[in-house]
Image (cartoon, rainbow, N blue to C red; front, side, top):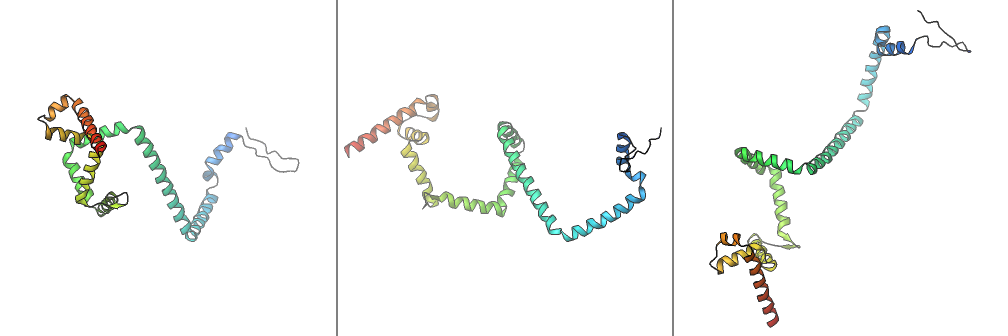
Length: 198
């Protein structure tokens, strides 16, 4: 049944199509008005070309900002994912390294041969040598480490003292780890005695 054309009080035409018919017309507007759509598309293309030629720099900046924000969001998502699945990723990397030892060596050689990594290592070396704003040479670096181990009585230092002074092997010390703690107490008492005499 055809729909009648209705008019307002002012004489304006009211749409005589139903809601479903109107939706279909919107979807398939090119079928109903093919000539008009062709003309509109041609004009639209010309306008787009003119606008792009005028605003090339604006578009470049928009693209740059879009990709920059995308990278930042991706990095944040990557950090969150790594924190949540740290143990899982570490296990996967360890398994891959055990299976592909040759590939890992080749990758390390390529990575270390790059000029960027060499520059980073130089900067790190300079920072490492400047301990408390005092330049430490490469030869004296081990001495500095040894002084810290002696003062704070690390396990490695105490173990070396036991092996050098007593006839005890490493395997025996591993079976009886209490020996290290006893040796630490002996060294502390000797130091206290020296300080009290001075």
